Amino acid sequence: MQNKKQVETVNEGLANPRNQRQEVQALQDTIYVIGGKWKLPIINSICNGNRRFREIERSIPGITTRMLSRELKEMEANGLILRTVIPTTPVGVEYISTEYCQSFGRIILEMINWGKQHRERLMHQGE
Image (tube, rainbow, N blue to C red; front, side, top):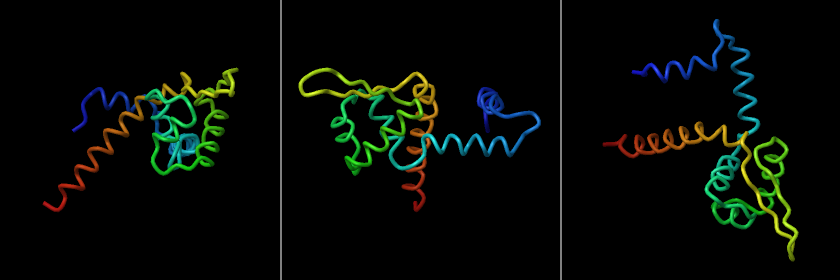
């Protein structure tokens, strides 16, 4: 059973009366910006303090250099991260999450919690 706060949170984003077309468009927009296999792990890595390309790459098992580069460019274009060139020798580059990206933090935490619960559920399904 949902508590009152959960119901209020759900109702904040929904029109009254409900507009399914608008809701589907909003879901598609969200999936376009953060969808795919790598964007959420990259956001998580950056938010956990990994700022340099190699730090991010090492923190995400299975991601290739080419894929990380491509994803970082897309995320920068969508305003999720800032890329800063540091004038050192050799030139350094750092990535940080924007305030816009951080506004997604609550949702990421909920996804992590849901994923943990789902994995636990699958592990106990056969018992």
